[in-house]
Image (cartoon, rainbow, N blue to C red; front, side):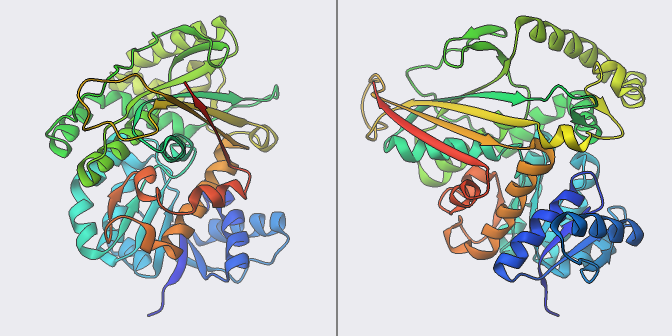
Amino acid sequence: MSRYDLVIYGASGFTGQYVIEYLHRAAVEHSLSWAVAGRDEGRLKAALARAGAVVEADLSGVQTIICDSSDTSSLLTMASQAKVVLNCVGPYRFYGEPVVEACVEAGSHHVDISGEPQYLEKMQLKYHQKAVENGVYVVGACGFDSIPADLGQICVRDAMEGDVNSVETYLKVIVPDLPGATINFATWQSAIYGFAHAKELGSVRKQLYPERMPSSKPKLLPRGSLHFSNIVNTWCMPFMGSDKSVMTRTQRGFYHDKGMRPTQLACYAQFQSIISCFMLMLVGLVFGILANYTWGRSLLEKFPGIFSFGMVSKAGVPKEKADNTNFEMTLIGEGWNHRVESEKGSSKPNRRVTTLVKGKNIGYGATCECLVQSGMVILQEMDRMPNAGGVYAPGYAFADTTLVKRLNEREVTFTTVVQEI
């Protein structure tokens, strides 16, 4: 049985329905076969009709595959019909693993947009060896979480030309002054249960990485929980998303598989004012307390708008607001224009590399483009990817591919400047 080049699983969901638009354009450009998958044929057809109206094409002939994350055999049937599955069904803590398992078993590559470290690292722990044996690539975090940060550090590494001592990231989200939520409910759910089960991540990491990576010098000093950054000229706080976890997995791959010197990492988020920082601290305090208890998690899920000051809604983000919610990520890397791992002591870095990553419509624009182009790279550039399969972070999986070039041509831009210091 011939396989579709790409299948969108969860194509009728909040994000999946927009992925259809981006996949259609890629399919036309590269003459690809594709299908959509989910548990409700009516909703899948409706999603195709909506996307078709946007891209001005008749998508009624696109094949639908009916499957459900609670039905293993249906997932296996779906995965058996795909070369690459684009998995849009979250939270991945609840729905992700059965899809990964089916893909690895059926020999289908798997790409998702998860920003959940425990899920991502658990998949690597459980399925990496089987994926290698079956020649399957499983690459998570291929959306806004965490393509900008993880591919951004690859841009820094390449421009450094030698070893990279440290990379600091600064995320700026530009939200228009329009009514409505700014965060998808599934993202809110992922955060709730990620925080509630945070202690479990330590156990997964101990099994996945029983040995520490060697420390690098000069030591990168933390800048504090709240600080004004002269680098980006705004107030900043540590970024609590998955970027650092994903970037560290890429560093692990370079160190263990290629013997490269580990890079120290720190991730920060920018805020318009110190008042914004204090508001986030308040939300975080209440969120952290409630997420630790079953009744508290129930309240957070039932009343997301109240506990997020209106930032989260089960109805999703209004289209106009989503279309105009953009991001900029600044990565500052310091290191050397030569290799230093064999030198004694720790010489002062002599090169600074700054990479600026920009993208439009974080949730339903840039994320969709990153996901689709990641799937395209697996289809077309497997000879540039590591080994013959496995579970990887995107920075490690796509380091030697044209993914950055592809994204630059599609409004997710990476711009790099080199400075001698």
